[in-house]
Length: 219
Figure (cartoon, rainbow, N blue to C red):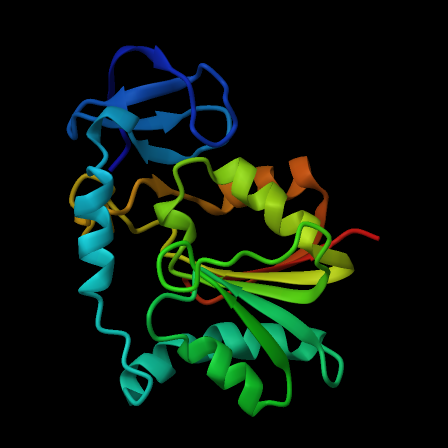
């Protein structure tokens, strides 16, 4: 189903273009005509305490085989690009950093950062061979600033691996389950992430399945 729109344009949370129109069928959600991102209007976000409480209730069990299977496509997409003993960061690792554990099992080093559960960020001059971010970027209030920060933490030639559900056919945004999670505030298509990559200096985007993309920071 194609989006239909109402009201005047607003400013996009990703590209800052004043080309985001409210989606008529889902008041409070906007679609940017410049970068193709869809987002929950800032006025519709949860209060910080309510949002944090929801994250604390997430059940990310390190021993859950289903959770491991869910993360495996990201690991498989990233692994061929990594040298032995590569050092990385799991950005937004949550309370159960299983992805970091899986990477360590493969012989890689993986630091943790999560604003709520592992709140000490890497040093400003930190440099990693890779950064992973699984089911995180849909929660970002200022996504371009966060992507810029990730770009800065990567070594030239380093790899960024992202996992998020994409607004691609046959997804109908109006009825989509992913939109209904109140902590999800920004929703990307492939074109949205291609816009981000081009803007910040990432190359060699490789898509894997319905949720995973890896990209290389240019030299």
